[in-house]
Amino acid sequence: MELNLQRPLLFFDIESTGLNIASDCIAELSFVKVFPGGEKRVKTWRFKPWDYALGRQYPMNPQASAVNGISDEDLKDCPRFADKVDEVIEWLADADLAGFNSTKFDLPMLAEEIERVRVNLHRNFEINLHDKLMVDVQNIYHFMEPRNLKAAYRFYCGGEDFENAHTAEADTIATYEVLKGQLEMYGDKLKNSVESLSGVGGRPRTVDYAGRLYLNDEGEAIISFGKHKGKTAREVWQTEPSYYSWIEGGDFTLDTKRQFARLKQQFQKERAEALNRPATSGELESLASHFNTGKLF
Image (tube, rainbow, N blue to C red; front, top):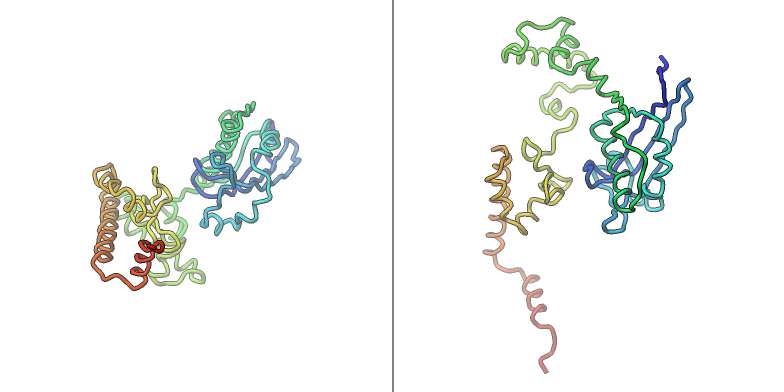
């Protein structure tokens, strides 16, 4: 069915250097503009992400690169967003917007990039994205096809609702029945083992349930929020140990506090062991060279 449009509708999607809207940048931006009557125009840009404060290319987060396949090298000869902002705004000017899960990420990221040009390059734009209608296709999908336990039970277990929904026992039994139904339906794709099933969709790499700490590819705990976002928990403990006391007394879940305390205990143990062990020959040579900087005579 064709869209009933009174004005153009601009579908858009963003690939970015990471997921932090405040600091990450657009690496790729694609527009599909649909006009009343059905005409469709497509435009895609790749941008060199730009750090205005440091005046240099902003790096891709390795995790983002692993998902979108875009590297720093791919972008080094591309224009900055600021170099194409007038063209981007021209595409945006007369249209409403549409995307998939764009309300939470793509739209704020696009607005942030425009605002960076406005603030850092003192540009004034006659556009306000807040004034535009936004159709989020994911919201429609979730509204029309609810992703809750009752919907799952109807889908996997015969099409009828189960009795006493939202009582703990009924919900628990229904969950058990749904898992068995999933194994029946996807037997060629799901392995019937708890270890395999627990990894479907990717095991969370968070250290605490609230996600204040996550593991990087090297298995090092990384802080995911606040002024130390992106730093290793080890680095923060070494440079600002009082941060751990702030966590302990702050408004965080007990699980988060416990995981920070566990890391602190681990780092303290490692330091004590390093201080108490004999120095290696390499460390002694390094110390000697530090003091013997030249001839005395």
